[in-house]
Length: 205
Image 1 (tube, rainbow, N blue to C red):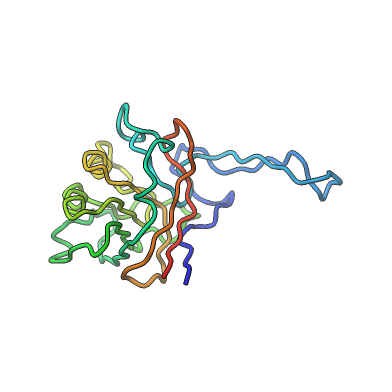
Image 2: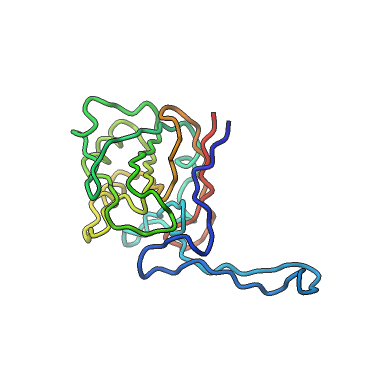
C-alpha cells in the first residue's frame, strides 16, 4: 500500500507570508497549436511537503544538494499526538513513549488546510528533538509548515536539528494515516546551494 502524504502543489497552496507563491508560466501550449506544451514554475523551495537544508538555519551549513539521502528513505513511525494549537510537543507530553523507527512523523491536526495559512499550528520543542536524536532518530517530520512556532525568532527546534544532525520534513499531510510503522520515501531534489527542496513524500507498507 502506498499513501501520498504530500499536499497538492497548485497556485492556491499557501506559502509562508512574504515567501514566493507558486505560479506557472506557459511558454508553449498544445491547445494553442504549438508542437508541445512547455511551462516554467516559479515558487519558493519551501513549497508544500518539503525538507529544510541545514543552510536554512545554520551559517555555512550544507545546502540541500549536499545532504546525504539516507535520512529520507527507510522505516518511520507515524505518531498521532494530542497537542494544543500554538504549543510545542515536549517529551513530557509523550510520556514514556520511545521511537520505534529512526524516522518519526508527528500528526498534530493543527494545520488542516494546506491552501490556508494559519499561524496557530503546533511545533516541536528542542528537548524533544534532542531526545529523539539520542534515541537514534535521523529525521523528524510534522504536518505543519514548520518544526518551530509561527512567531518564533530564535528557532529552537530548527537549531536543535542542526546540533543533532536531524533531517527536517515539513508540510506533510497525515490525515487518515494510521499510526505505526511505515516506510518513508521523501527524497529532496539535488538543488546545489539551495536552502530546501520540495519532496513527493509517500508512505509504503
